[in-house]
Amino acid sequence: QDELSEQVVPTNPAGRAPTGSRLHPALPVHGSAPPGGSMAGGKRGGGRGMRVHAGERAAPSASRALARHVMSTARPRPRHGGEPLRTRPAAPQWRSRPVGQPPAGSTGGRWGPARTREVQDAAPGWGIKGGTRAVLEFIRVHPDVRALGTEPHFFDRNYDRGLEWYRSLMPRTLDSQITVEKTPSYFVTKEAPRRIFNMSRDTKLIVVVRNPVTRAISDYTQTLSKKPDIPTFEGLSFRNRSLGLVDTSWNAIRIGMYAVHLQSWLQYFPLSQIHFVSGEKLITDPAGEMGKVQDFLGIKRVITDKHFYFNKTKGFPCLKKTESSSLPRCLGKSKGRTHVQIDPEVIEQLRDFYRPYNIKFYETVGQDFRWE
Ligand SMILES: Nc1ncnc2c1ncn2[C@@H]1O[C@H](COP(=O)(O)OS(=O)(=O)O)[C@@H](OP(=O)(O)O)[C@H]1O
Image 1: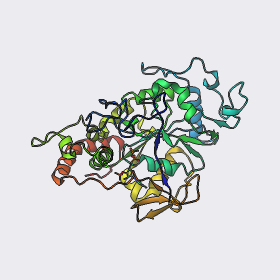
Image 2: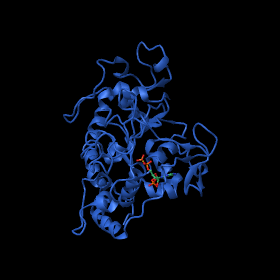
Image 3: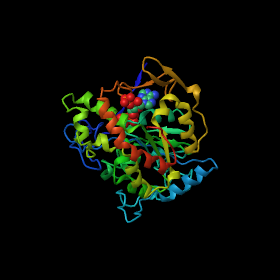
Image 4: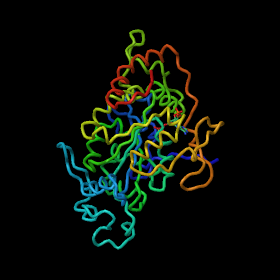
């Protein structure tokens, strides 16, 4: 079987992705890693995120109303005193236009009558080792969804490139289709909520969350696969292990403090605009989790049990077919790695550390993910 590969949109003029950018973005929040930073090189390295965009919809539904609204707000507008989006000056084509209509003066091409790359009803989803790639690859099977396969990292490290750049990356969509993008590091990017809000206050957000201890180990395992010389997980996790002082400046730890990161998002977006996918259930019941994602996006439940099979070799659910091929496909080798063995006592200490954050997170979102 072919494996789905994960790509990152190049972030420098030479068109090269910085080394290690898949692990830690060059412009992280909550401290920053050096370009190509790793958990070894900089404990404050940024994490990774996932995101999605949505195209306007023609269906007479609540989601259509939402898309309409987004259309009229797609033009950068500072809110909450936030910074304006950087764009090329006066772009009347996308200032606002009726749903389903090409911009005035358009003769087709990029702005073909039934197609658009408008950034409208963005529905970013993040997770950072939570299962974001799986959600993206599963949701793009839906005929009403078009997905950007790469991670554009627009709202974190590529923001200076401007909205036009971002839009140009988007796949063309029919009026009835949603465009989806994932960049997991948005979740921990301080500026991302404000920037996305300024682009569109109606953006729908999808977050894939997973037991933060397992997530941290997954993150570390990924880094270790690229940089075998990094210190041990146990060593990086603590400022003082005997005192049980966890090092929250280490991104592998910090990313899992979901309740903290969520607060930044709730300053801009209501909870009803954010959907939380359980990274655990995504593996045990992909159809169930994807059913909820489809409901959240306001699209028909097309992706069901029939789309999945359990691949014993991979040890994960895989797609029987994808949007581009009728052949079965599993995610790539970087998804579902065998985790590094961690001292059980350390795992216990980290469980204790995360417990209050988890409880706060459950209370905030009104959902118990049962990580205890
Ligand atoms: N169907 C399927 N196949 C393979 N892997 C799956 C699947 N569903 C969820 N997962 C879990 O996804 C984890 C990787 O998460 P992300 O895609 O969010 O990682 S990343 O942040 O984009 O690097 C990855 O984490 P690890 O197991 O630690 O590698 C998987 O557990």
